[in-house]
Image (tube, one colour):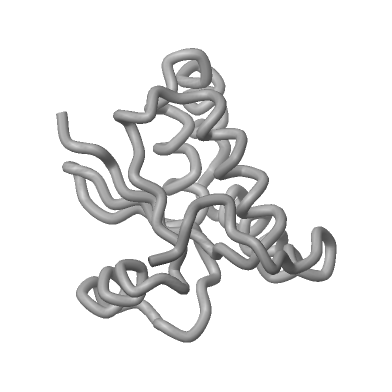
Length: 124
């Protein structure tokens, strides 16, 4: 099985916290974590048509495609066996409701949680 790639904001404390949690919760063979500020992140964003200056959503790249916003987060959770049932339950909430909450948190994440000078994973 090929690793799924998660592109995230390496300067966001909330994003780094979630990545740290995922690193503790998962087998290292499940995900490849790529900060969007890295060369690899910039290349992936450009290849897939995303803005390279800022990131407003987590991006999951897997064998089923590109997943963003709440769908991206729920698909990440679903890949972790202990969190799969939780992801399934949350998927019953209508997407427009989930995405509204996600977008609100994404818009305010730096104000609420601050900006980090150190990324959870090394930037190359």
